[in-house]
Length: 192
Image (cartoon, rainbow, N blue to C red; front, side, top):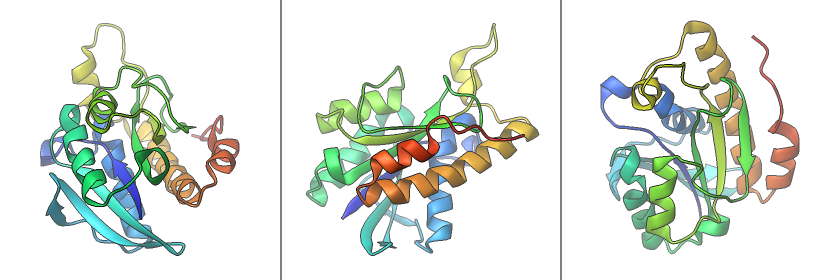
């Protein structure tokens, strides 16, 4: 069993915001592999299915971003998963331009509150992750206001393309090919 978590905030008002690109990625995986994500359990919307012969759980925590770890830890404990090799988290990154993704085998929270909470609740920072670039906040903007805002049309197009790359990368990573995913997608620039 492999867990793929996308981070975001519940509520219609947060749909398609920068902070919700993790949810958007789960929606894209759900659509491509026909795995409905609508079961309410473990403080998340979940769906189980099979991708390339592997049993998977797709999850969108409904705890709000800063408490994502509560949901993730519940899922990990319920399914007796090892987050260091059976979990992938997809989330937004303000240090990457819109349309770029960065894959990591493990690492620190890098200032992302959702990741901080997952590390705190699971007790590890060894889980794999895909960061989707949402761009740097403009001078004078509050960070919270920026990540809760929506993309301009051109940036949204780039991000949607990057989400497609994130789906492809996630499939490789769950098959134990994180290095291949990094080689293929880290540093790839989306064309506007």
